[in-house]
Length: 403
Image (tube, rainbow, N blue to C red; front, side, top):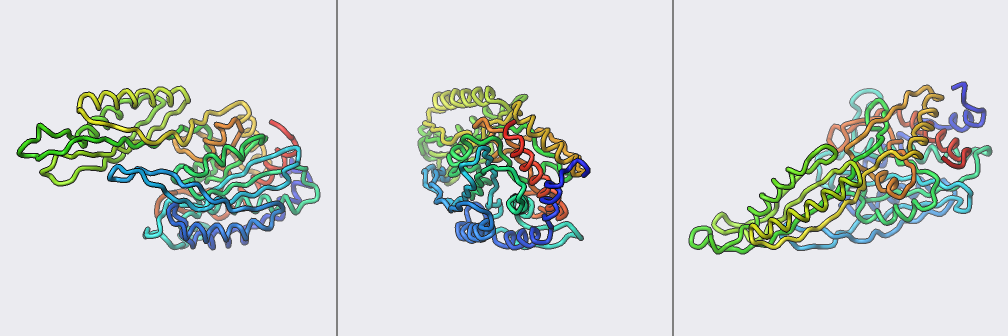
């Protein structure tokens, strides 16, 4: 703590846990599953009220619809909730991007809807760590800085999107636009481990659906006249899985299709997730999958259409990102925190930001664990801890002006 300047100490002293915790409890009490448009609208309204304490212009942007392959093979539009964007001091010489997401993985009809205390300081609830706690960390770090007369001159944009948990299909172009000309970015996903370890390099992620069209026939009278789309999908799934290797994970996840047991199935949809750890591996697997689809079409005499893409590019650690990580580590040290990082197979909006050439640390949010499950929990003392870490990082970044 002795390495903090008086101005830094003054800013950090204003950050308190109670108002942050109250907001997390309020926000987490409202279901905001990615497909729950009503809950997302309610959450967006609450966040708009909360962030209105900051200077600048706040807007709720309508999300562009995206496409989804239905179980019958038809492609339909999917609506998404609005995205919150705030712009503060756009003319300042140094500009940052801060991102979070309001959606959770828990749909409106999920059994996990309420909050409870596991023990003192451990709050269990949907989205408390991922990432309504992180949103509170961001808000209160900026609130403390904005209240200071000694803060350096910098500007920033905030994005809190409504579709991160499903790969940010509607907000990905918005992320690219907001990342332009930024010095650095911070994203407020929960820490990679309960001890506060940050996520460093990340794998990329691509979600694909292969729509396969065969030919129906009676399973007993004339099966030889049919073309089994389900069998072609299963064969393709096995061949795709065989592409798994060092630096690449392939997960055939689901096959939709077929009808009665006495009918040769004339349609099937194979869903698959790909996790390449480097851009060249992404190029390799995409090419190989197209080759496998052509092979399946020929061998099974079916038609096939590949739908989807790589929504999360691989995120290696660039030189500027390494400098940013070191800055966060030093800030942690000056606050009495030990900050480390590790590579992760998980993905987030940090992947998309890094692909724009912007250095980003994407796990500045709270400590907790068991995210994406009914055991999700928040370590409440980390609200203050991570808000102070974020505020100090932002102050020093703004003071440096560049990485």
